[in-house]
Length: 489
Image (cartoon, rainbow, N blue to C red; front, side, top):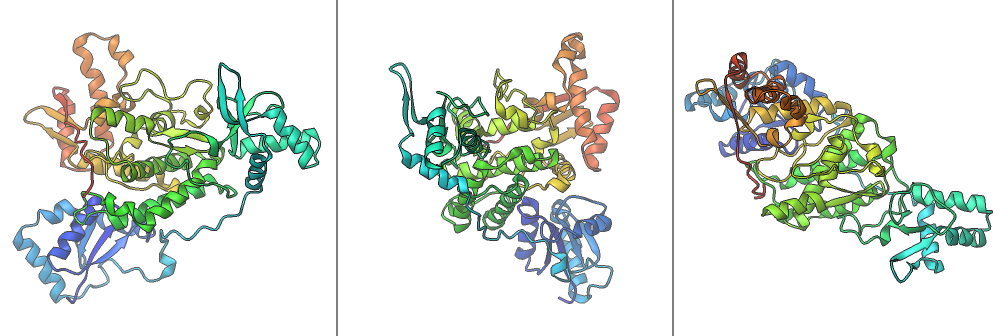
């Protein structure tokens, strides 16, 4: 081959994987420019193609398009492209190859050597002192707890500090997320009979409850970036060749997964107060997706309605000293504490300390970024704080251009993913507004959802068809059935 086939990709993109697999089946060599690694090439790809989605495929300088464009080529057209690269060298107008390390921002996870937190050693000494025990009365009892007053007494005696310094040291134990009040509703330490417990002594089903966290906490954004890189590594290695499934079985016994599980210890004591809105979005989206992977690997997929209910309400991580389930991350944090599907209550009460970290307004684009592990979910991606809105927008465009939206002008019908039914309030549907209108104007609420879809689609034929339906407003909205089958190999 004199010329060059170039394909722009991102890690974990199913259509990218399918495109590469088809090229291999055809016996065609290609050069891959992974935009997660060569981030400076994103602008170059957009300028060359006018598109922001991947993959984008070139035969020399000839732009073929994405996977669907490539897959729909006639045999004659494909043969002409193959002849082009076999007989002609790639000239300067073809996508250039990455030239050196300065162009590369790889996502390899370096080994992390932590600085031991001095309070981790203090915890060990406190537990050896004998003040940690069962406390209570014949009516109630709290195992593995200590009284605030007894802890300060021990600190004054063993560390030779005055009582004011002892209280400050105890407060640090709470702020560093080594310990908490037994009812988890107090953030200030009290030098009295109130009971406290170390996080490691909690009876918790959180998937990172049993991994030790003795390191001085790194900034939350740094921990989030490490988490993102771990996800990229796992999906780069265990995504199937056709891009449609994940080999969770092989992942379970891999060294990469074991390293990831150890890394989740850092989540336990991370300081969320430091996060900007953009960092919070990227951190919690990546953590949600990682938690889904973790649960599917160690617990297996939910296969019934009750199992799915438990999956989203029970599967959890300890993050910043508090336990967060999948629903609490999605609806509590990212949907600004809105009620989850099939729930009568908001995730966080007014006194819940986790409410302080919730977004002020729900972010609808998160629905195209969160991955539940089912085939009807969006494909796995990872997100960065600096580009979070653009990345979520691209994820939404790719989702809507795919199989989860169909519209037929002739039939006056629009079919949407069930996501737009379950979370219609996030997409502009106002039930209070609709309740004030007559029944025949229910369409007004529905139309708002469809208008949101239109506004967030990339330029494509589907968008043109949808515009035609919206002009008259005379259309029927239905929803596709949701395929809960696991996206495994």
